[in-house]
Length: 248
Image: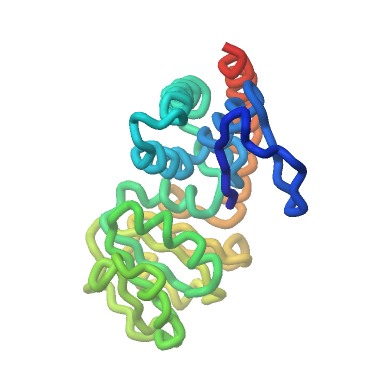
């Protein structure tokens, strides 16, 4: 989402027509630390950018003038995350789905639209078997090019009308992200240990399942909203800590 350039005191700091932001000294270190801690990410406090930063740090030669600053940022980021940014909960569809399906051995997904494509990377990182069920599997051909490391049978696409519970694992999860009537999901729902229903009509066309197994879109909105307020409070505390660390 962004590119960062590092330079010494002699680094050219003339204004750029591209709208680059320029930070110097303590402000530069503070900004870097906020980025590494995920405080400028769409999902506040996410860990992906810290992983990318570690990869970059490992690529910088030990004799480089930049290395000590990067190592300090890495250490301080771990400190800030451990103190203020742990257990942030679900702030997005993807993070919520990953948490709900954490204990499942496999996940069946109904639908192949944008929501599925947004959530899929979160689920693939868990290393679970994922089966996508759509009306027209041929329209999902490009999914394997996007995720070349998730080859069959770990990731597979099937025709919805051909679903059979025989292939479901005992501890199976079900994610519904297509406008399919609940009556058509009966067999799938009965075979699922956990159900996350992202349908807009999930609260009016309720899937028949025990309340402790079912999470509707209304539940999703409520959980994300509750989490958001707590995360913002923790993020403010983290930024205050980073301000003092940058001065030190």
